[in-house]
Image (tube, rainbow over all chains, first blue to last red; front, side, top):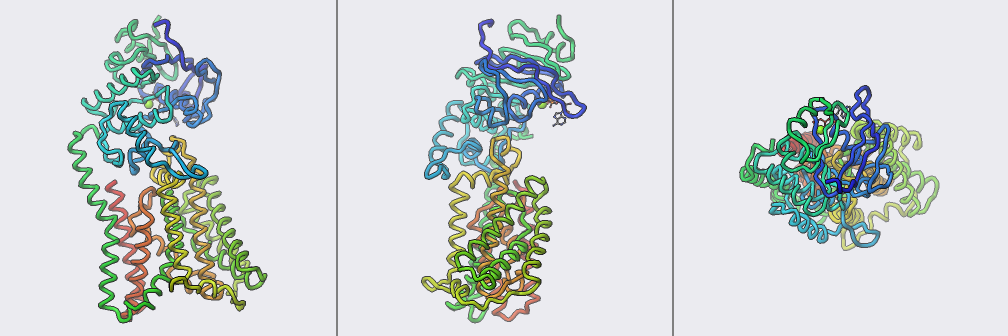
Length: 249
Length: 331
Ligand SMILES: Nc1ncnc2c1ncn2[C@@H]1O[C@H](COP(=O)(O)OP(=O)(O)OP(=O)(O)O)[C@@H](O)[C@H]1O
Ligand SMILES: [Mg+2]
């Protein structure tokens, strides 16, 4: 897979919370059109790293290169502009709003003078299309998110990322709270996204799952990025050893 | 946690819950109609054109202030500064019209500007000071009351000049202007909340500040706008109250009657709103205001002593709070 193209790169990215050095000078390459898995023990710094990439946090030092261009990511809106959209660990869905309004939250379609009026019809149409594209099973897009299953919520959050023009979709432990059947649904969803040429960053604690679905596996330990392996060259034993802090030769 | 349910189970629980919520939310329509019909039989003179217009007039004052208050609540901001804004705006109206000799339109514009300034002040403390609205606006209300007291020298300003009261007494199709203004407020509010981007952002910010922020909603600006709308409707109410009474109604209560924080709060809760924001429909609020007004009016016509009426209204608030908490537990 040496021919794979790097779409996003962090350059000596650093982030501390007071005395906690959560991300230590991480330089990480994310490959285009691939599933890039990020693994590591609890508190290794995975969520912090992807929040830096999605603009939810600002680094103390370091920067980004997106599609070869040096850039900074000023905030969530800046990340959307670069085609980066995160599906957070808690999904950041608004429970008391319906599926359509959640999918368009912050990027509503508008019409009329000054673009102040909502284009309800247009949003409805596009929501259906996006959900169909990812084969999501949501019978009623006017349903409140609070009544959806875990798998359905994941689909809504991913749908939102796609509506944002997300080319690089970040998913933080998307299956952590799900049962067997819904986990399969989400894995299929990830497969569908990759087939459509999207780049996926996937955080997971499930090593088997990672080996099943990821193209690249990167390991973090105590804020450091220990290394990246393509799935074909990596073994579960090696990855597990790295997760426990054993830097391989 | 959701993983424990199979999809079917969750859907049924969801459907039953939605049905119950629907009943709780729309019960206000039924209760209001029942109360109305009951008073037709129980309260003498209740069902006369004159009294019905009276009900609409008193509802209009509480209704206008509640419309803006609702918008703040939807954005997750409990605005307790209503009394303060009323005071500042009533003094502004009386001073400018009576003492400074401003024309009617100019007086109205400046009184509304005073409301906007008050709302911006609230926004400053809430957003920049990062203080919960409930507490922040309690503090700003103190400042506003002091300013009103200072401006008026602590005196009620009587308006002898013609033109102000006449304007609110103008009737169109037999209905006084303040009632039309109330309906206008609700129509504009309804369109804003359901059909505009700002409305969608107000709901989302109130329902989940963090999720909205992460989704790129300009949450702080939304909160500022909601607080300005709330103060603006309070100022509008103050102008109408002042004009009707031909004097500044410094502390709102005596003359404005039902125009106060508690009525607005009761109406908002009865209307099925969540105090935590993000849930509710403004049109239900209008009905809740009518309900409270009809309740007070009917009891008064039945010669129930004022003390008892206040107690009944107090219970209405308690009931409303219980309903609201039940609702919050369910969602
Ligand atoms: N906002 C914050 N304030 C202070 N400390 C934080 C904050 N966010 C994360 N941390 C700390 O930074 C470290 C890395 O946390 P992070 O959430 O990135 O880990 P993680 O790899 O995602 O772990 P998990 O697998 O448990 O989700 C932890 O020690 C955590 O306590
Ligand atoms: Mg994490």
